[in-house]
Length: 180
Image 1 (cartoon, helix red, strand yellow):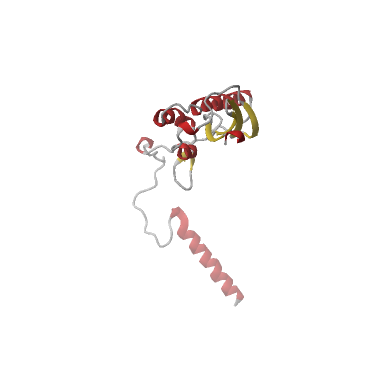
Image 2 (cartoon, rainbow, N blue to C red):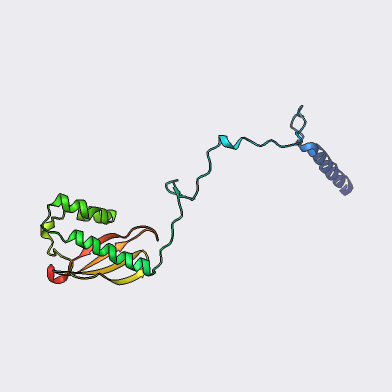
């Protein structure tokens, strides 16, 4: 009895294997076209090329790689220069709001633009930068804290950048305590 079961199993295996010969399953009809000896390549020009960069899982947009910032002499110089430029644009209380805002807004982050959009220049105590800026916190290569002296005291500016080659943008002007 055990021999009969073994023989039936061997016969089933042999039939299964023979049905797969030629790349066809036992229940598939035979093809009248013989397989091609050389594969044909599709016309690749008809397809949209794959995007370069990485695909954002949430938005499905392609994000290009960005250079990771580090602190070097050029970064230190550029953050100080950006802070001084921003403070010179900011500390002009004699200007009308529209003119003042046209000069200040391009130097700000998106959030700071929303935060400072209704500032009245006349309320700013400083009207002159009196010395060179000084980088006082560089614990992150994406954020720089710079102190800029003015005739109303030393302002502290927080600047951000999104990549090594991105411009520094001001996220916060903090007036000196005695100016409050």
